[in-house]
Image (cartoon, rainbow, N blue to C red; front, side, top):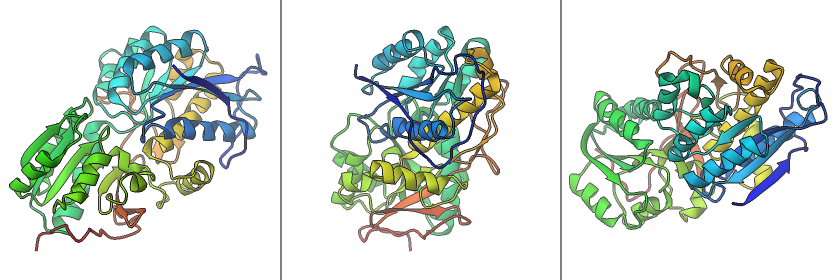
Length: 409
């Protein structure tokens, strides 16, 4: 396993001084970051975390103690991630961990967080099971926090937006649900099948495809045969290939929904512009001031790394700030005290106001969703740029589709 250690000591824009125990003031406070650095959606996780650490350190760290980001590449492997987590906790002595955008990886790490009493947050995995475990076995799983929306919550945002964008604006009536076969899409699809019809879109087919699929021709042929008005997606591990083939084959239905890879600015280049017209869900976007921190973070990230941040870069950046604040409030790096402090989080980050749900909630240690906390956006690729199209009060543009797309009359 490739393991790199990086001490973030440079300047940033949101630094704040964090007071913490004076003991061992010279020793850094380590935060482990386990991510899929070769993946489009994973590379932003260590990048965002390092930016936050640089800013906090620039402002004096945690009472003079610097934050050290210890990052690990899990190579998209749950077993590699577990080995990295064990090393982070037992050998590298990190105080907390930020881990993965892949639900299967996070679910593999979750029992280890309990066994090793290691505080952990995911910046991008979506499976409902992550928070369900915390709810069902709080005493052992309380060390795990969910730093992104759960699948059911994501589906609800997509459905709510579809009422305006697909049904009211475009007069659509039917949809095909097309999702990859993965842990996170099981609850996503279950909710899609309920909330899309409730919002006015009849689901005429439900397709689950292997993440290893390379030829989407038979799938798109099947979809075209159903003649739906829109394809509602749930894709993350796949993304480039179906988008390219959607454009190459001139599939006349818009692609709308969840496409994790589309949240990264490299997606336009990766698809050679085939992404034009694709609409996808995000909790923050570079063109919308979700909070005063959102746009400055995106600009700084782009200047530093050469591209705009994907969805998990925003969240991992926020996660470092929350861990730092929890450690300050805890007055130590004792894991139980950190968890207790983290449960009281009330932090305005790049994605909104972040607070965690209590242990009795179905989504225990998940983020509060709704007005005043975390909401959602729908963003569309238009001529090389991501443009927010929903909700109307923050939209920066209207929907535009490629010429081959056939919309209802």
